[in-house]
Length: 261
Ligand SMILES: NC(=O)c1ccc[n+]([C@@H]2O[C@H](COP(=O)([O-])OP(=O)(O)OC[C@H]3O[C@@H](n4cnc5c(N)ncnc54)[C@H](OP(=O)(O)O)[C@@H]3O)[C@@H](O)[C@H]2O)c1
Image 1: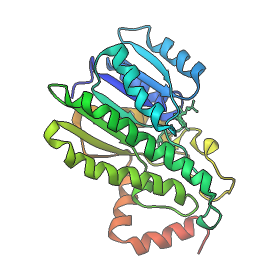
Image 2 (image 1 turned 60 degrees about the vertical axis):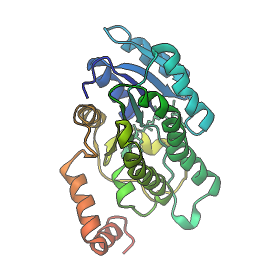
Image 3 (image 1 turned 180 degrees about the vertical axis):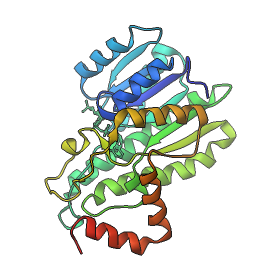
């Protein structure tokens, strides 16, 4: 769809990929409902983006709380009167091997990365259905949601859950003209690892990562072209392809990469 004048909910908007996406979508003429937990950062970003022809509002939200996730839709409708696009970008990592995984941390990750996005989507569906041309739901997953890595199983499982939910949802919503896309970033240069729960060095990547802006541009292209699955780099595509076609080979490679073999 053409992004101009579309009303977009964007979670995790204040840092990393979310902040780069907010700026990219504002330039493309979107009206933005920006969500994250930190009010000051949200207000600063909304003020920055409000200077042009677009409008951005700040809605402090903890996506780990399903009531707050659903309220995000109500607050957006109260300001803009409509909703066209939902981007589930906020997420939290957890770094620990399965044997050490803390249950409360693993549950928090599932709350933020899976149950919050589901609640947001459920609240958004009636408003997307009401549009003549439906709407678009974009979930930001990860290549490790497709092919898990050792040391971050709790995070991989939450992203896999999001992807499987999207597979059902896409078919369920087709007749309502609501489209569902999943974006799979690989390693991206943000502070995501610093924000992750768990204190094991396991799961800390050694790659530098692509700039967040590159992922933001891919998200804008996803709005334009509404592709089902979106990858950022050739490396990411190859990682997934090898993981699907030769899973045993990927086991060997990941074992070597993480010094487990
Ligand atoms: N960076 C990577 O290498 C990488 C790779 C693959 C996929 N991804 C995915 O890309 C997305 C963005 O990641 P990023 O690297 O940009 O992360 P980031 O730099 O850690 O930023 C996370 C954003 O989400 C917000 N957030 C965190 N917890 C939240 C919560 N409970 N409720 C609402 N907002 C919350 C943060 O703001 P507050 O702290 O103010 O809430 C912040 O704006 C995530 O879905 C991540 O899984 C990242």
